[in-house]
Image (cartoon, rainbow, N blue to C red):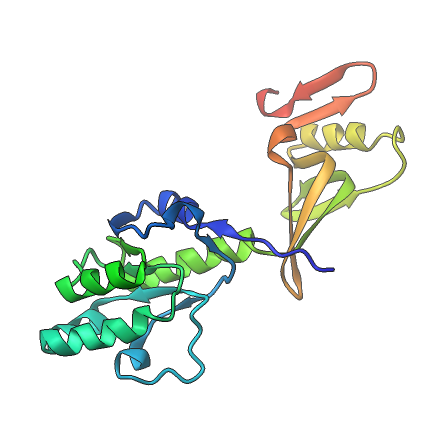
Length: 218
């Protein structure tokens, strides 16, 4: 069975300093499970074939300018249909404020609306990159991960054979320790892996006869 991961919407809001224009009643429990972001351009024109409501929705200057030229009644109808798909949240970029009809339909369908001061393409790229890492499939392996000349090297083998000592010697030569003992490996793409240390043991290495040391302070 393949494990699936999710990111709380609240975490995304804090990570990107988003402003809450309207919070749904279930805001604290909403979790994002898809890394992609959708800009509902065609949907504003009524075309919903192949629409992906599991994604975070993002509107920028183009989309907001389009709906701004519509009558209030038409805006209400558009947002009534769009918000009925129950996506995790809608982000409006460039500091643009939501139309009253948008807030009205957000309340009706219990949809969270967020605001960002960033440019639309910039916030989209940042969120996709963040979610790609946060939602990536992962495994934890016993070993020591080091970075040597920009390349990650995973040292494996039985306990007590000197993996940590080898990592410390590499540190002395200007290379980097990424993780000691437990290495969390995430698959970002078919050809890309990234290794990190679990938060509890980050920057620490255990050496025989010495104990646990914080390499960040060496």
